[in-house]
Length: 112
Length: 115
Image (cartoon, rainbow over all chains, first blue to last red; front, side):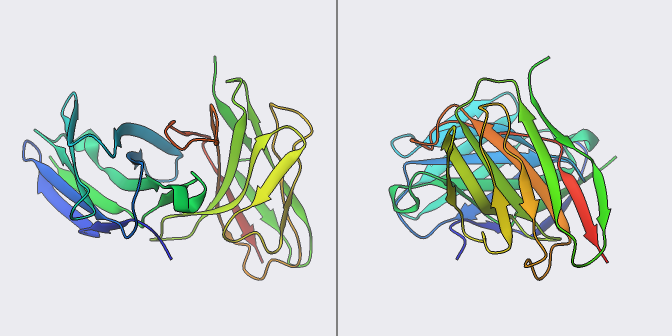
């Protein structure tokens, strides 16, 4: 079964608003990564957070990790129409032989 | 211009035919991966390779085969044994899969339609 489960499945917001996506997972991990996919394209890596980290920032992106709740969130601030895409979390864990296991993704639509 | 290339972007085949999807990288990465993506779903790992001449099955390897004769190349063959081959196929690479703490770089994908 998939390790990561994103919530919500789809999100529609107005340009300028913040977008928050959540990811929950089942087993202990050593890192969690977020990727973005524009329609019909490959995935692009956004940010990696290790199990001993609680928060990371990259530009308008903020990722948090709560290992006690086995969850992570991705916050995109001041969203733009160009942020419209699918966002996936992927977990790396010893249990999976250090491969990444991807969730089903959140579809974000930013309306201008 | 470094990156991963996949060709073709769209591929159409008749049922019962084998088809090979190309994946090439010039990033000097050791590890390469093949994923399958179905509508509304995440990525599922088909095969991965950590080093030349070695590869391992992923979660959904049945009906697929791969080879890794060169570091730069990791072609995927979708055989007639794959029951539902129509999907979007993504190739990726990373510095090493010995540890997952490296980002994966993805190609643009190949959309395979089998009728």
